[in-house]
Length: 595
Image (cartoon, rainbow, N blue to C red; front, side, top):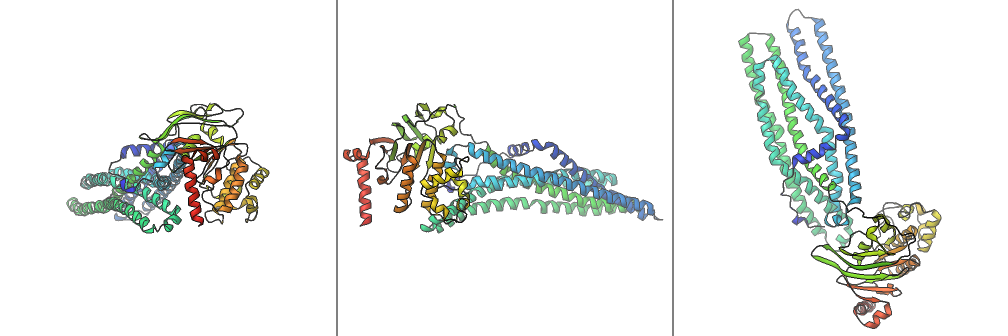
């Protein structure tokens, strides 16, 4: 994981581009969105007309004698208008909630699909927690924006246009005076948006960082405790959390200025309207104008609402723009290069050839140097060497997790680059040092590589892997749900992964340090299971315990990305070279440990 201290978020983001990307996601639902926004506008218009109808009813009350029929008529009209306004608003909210849920679902589906298309190198440079934050926090924020902010934006704009129109029908003088609020408020909103946008961007990015840190520490809490790393973990958390707090505080402080400032401007205008309206009433000496002033003041109070709401919408849109940009950045990451061929092997024998293979994770650091080697069908090939020698890198190249820089890898004479990745990877079964098992039944875990396998095949494989008896002692047997807290040891998990590889029944195998983290007795069980698994298959075994690969057909000894020796165990010991040195050093370590 890259150190958080080296991350920089000073670069400003493109608000316009992010919002265009967000609105583009609405295209498949444009009819529903347009209809919803139309209902929002109609509902707002009806609510705007309410005070005007109320003014007409008040005029009938002021004029004597009372016209009860007219008052009743205006009252019924008012009730019907507000009822329709409520109905339109409810339908609009329902439609937008459905659209927002659909778009959130689409984004998460796209992110999930994108994960499977990205090269492995992407995950070497990005934390899982940040990716999860994009899928959860950022997508949730986008959904909330589409659900609330867009209808509020339309309602606010409708009110900002509609209320002055109704105000003009009452008094053009008072209307012109009250419209001073618009340029003052919008100017203030624009100023705040300009200063606060960068803090909203940083807030979302630091939120991803803190999720990444928490995910990493939580998943490795045993290691943290074993090395007394609690203080260091808390210190790193505090550093990221402080950055998140500062960016959130600044963004929220600036956005929080909007509503009180707009209300302050509105209240000043409101006070001025009262004084100016009273003066006009005295000048006109018109009793009916008093009811108009009351209605006008109602509109002035209503007018503050959309302006303040507009400020809130713009504040929300800033966070949504940052979230949209983070989702957009991920979805536009370069995919893994497309497959260049679809060649297959009619009958896989298992001959594997490395011809002048060179590879580097970074351009300036070559890991594999002009590597050549041939594994014959059915041979057990052991790969040994010190850490960083390039052992696991060979496996990554075999599985096409990475592509070679030069040279070629052939399986039965066919370049794996001319196969599809899925086909090439299906040629190999894998048993890794990390016993990856997902939360689900033991049956689902075992059949992960071959879902069509029968229960008979599954049980047979488990018996060969020395794990059937253990499974039958568990509650639920093969239908037991595996979880993080399941009482399954590391060795038992390893036996399950061996059984899974047996069920997959691939013609070749890769065993990456499969016995490095178990006790001696379990190692014997695992070794027996692996011997059964590798029988008749070309297999590549990466091991630190050299005692486990004495019977290998060939041992490749690697150092600094190059093959320094290869041959059988006895031959290499007789040479007295690098392998003999490794073996003797390990033997001495074991001897000292026993003493």
